[in-house]
Length: 529
Image 1 (cartoon, rainbow, N blue to C red):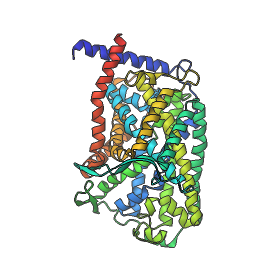
Image 2 (image 1 turned 90 degrees about the vertical axis):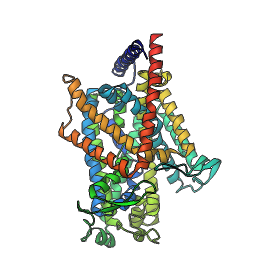
Image 3 (image 1 turned 120 degrees about the vertical axis):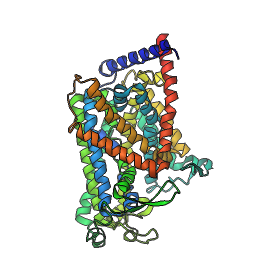
């Protein structure tokens, strides 16, 4: 490539970014600033709370084998998430534009890094999460309507058998349309269409369902305090057993990869491995930054919403896990015939929240939990669909995605084309049955992008020392540096001990590099014309 071509490409991308910035900051010409502090905060909370808090504690308990470390894993998640939110607050207040994290990476580290994040977000992170949450909605709707099931096929294309590729096990999935993923597709289509009809419509749905979800979590905690204290669980988890296996010198068995040898590792290492569940369950707090161009008084409301939203949700997550330990023993046996015999580790299908509610209230507790998860899934997906489309819109404004995605609906001023593109790809993932594996593979990459974004905070402090910063990250530079160190440690541990969750994510990211040069070349050609 000649130097003239490179200069032309750089000029085109820079021109696109300038237009993007101007448009995002001009509500009369672009997006409507319709999100206040309440709506921004419910978007943070609603995007975070899905079904994970009711499920992943079983896998964490099996990994750490200690009541103290179960809570410790969630404490690490809470500490890292709040530091991340406080750090993102500075970037959000400094650059309140549609696209959020994509913009921070673009401005701090360069357009390639922004594109790689948007590429991975579209292919897997956002759309895969939407698909998984939608299928969870169908799964728990099946509690009330048994005809809705993953085994009730409308159109079964094929079963892809499992096959090994290096440390990974791929395949082992059914492709086709079942009644369960049909419900998932209908949910995704409905919410995508609803969000076309104005930002305030989507925000109203988000506010209602987030209040319902927070109330459900608070209700679980309240019931646990007054009805949940179980003598068997308290004796097993607290009476001299709380700190079991929790010392820094303790050794924990850990299988390497999908079928590798079992090694003994230290407590810090096992806590890092456990973060694949807890960190992912507390993820998506950054989605509010995607909608920054539509937040009123963003310099104040974005940092506040990040701090308030993450703080409330993580406090509830900690309290829920404390209740789990008061209601059920950590240990159990997979063949147990009662809820107490199975414990937290072997709760049926890992549904710890359901087991806790059934232990407290009997069979009706399972129905109440299924209803709570339906609320969580519906509200979570609304937030994910609303916010994710803003990233692809920002990319298209930069000439790094389909050009039509950069257009807003002429009446409602929403990124309608972006919502539709996101909807179509998500529905394909639902039918393919691959979304679950893709999400397992991408946890590592998600953390890498968090590291890079907080790294961009340091870069921008140097590159743009005089830029207006209505809010400055609390604890800078110590707390952001601590986040980077902790996240790097987790990523290194995952690379070493869980390669099946790391290398696929890296491959997806790297595949975006040639795609970036194709898109940017197209952008420079269009600009030249």
